[in-house]
Amino acid sequence: MNIRPAELSDLDAITAIYNEAILTTTASFDLEPQTREERLQWYESHDPRFPILVAESEGPVVGWACLSRWRPRKAYEGTAETSFYVKEDQRGQGIGRKLKQAIIEEARRLGFHTLIAGVAEGNHASLHLNQSFGFEIVGTFKEVGNKFGKLLDVTYLQKFLN
Image (cartoon, rainbow, N blue to C red; front, side, top):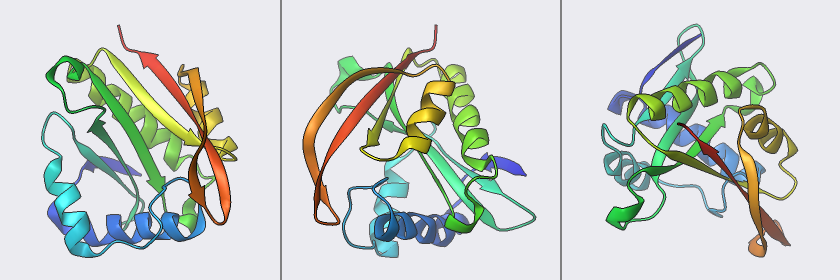
């Protein structure tokens, strides 16, 4: 497996993986698949300070991770939110773990102070993975998302990098 910075040519694969998660999981609270144009706007909102990484397995992109601005105000610039998504038929093979490790290392290299992760109710694998990397639960917002006909809690975790 190879993990590298995302390129514009990866956008279709990134979009497909994200749309699969929208339709089948609570990992994203988007409700409708996104168009390539919508994901292009998202892609272009990332820059060297807030990178996107992709994982390739024998050629095709099978997952991606990113750092995103946690809040837009300048005082939050030492904090980033982490996200990662893995193609459904590739889950359970350690790809998410490798992406999470790579994005944490990238955040350290970029000088971030702390990382945030939000995990929707029922996503035990993501919660466990984040905790295995030292993310600690800092709070839960109750019934803040409505997906698949159910009100869902979101638990937030935090990891200090220094």
